[in-house]
Length: 253
Image (cartoon, rainbow, N blue to C red; front, side, top):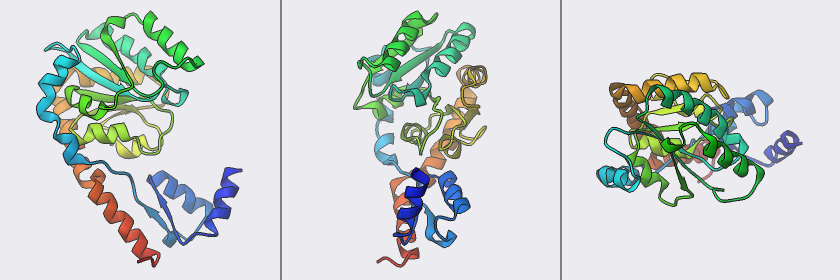
């Protein structure tokens, strides 16, 4: 149904802009429009504003109740099945059993709601063998600021467009441990800006998280590469430039 609706809408378009290259490839394969009318725009964040909070790192860590030796991993994602928190919690059990320095910070929309997923997730957290190493932050308007107090970012989504929270994390130089979902795997290069594991594979995710938690030099290397990538590809000006080139490409002024 949706594919046919998209194909109908495409007949009325001069061009289509895509947030990720996987969608671009799909549209090309399905022949929605000539390849010359399909454009990659990506998604962007205000890198400079995000990085302006880095000097607050020590204060943010105190605010979050983190101790000096803690390695804080942020999983900031709304509570819904596609984000697959269960895979993260299972991986966290393995990581904390081998390195008790790991602390998980969970935040996102839908905290406090009474839906089935939210109830089951909160029950799982309360039963978690390392519950004391999990901090529930609820919904936070300042999530991007809180990232500056963390050491790594995680995301276990089954699919994404372009995950904004990872763009923000990479902008401030955080390494990423994530599932190789569409959208995410385009943003994170395995072994370069982060470590990827198969969707739903908690054992592989745990191995990657443990590598990041145990090796500060790895965090530094991955984080530095992530920051460079964000500056060149994810900064708002870079995205604006791609959009303007697309508009020029389809003859709009």
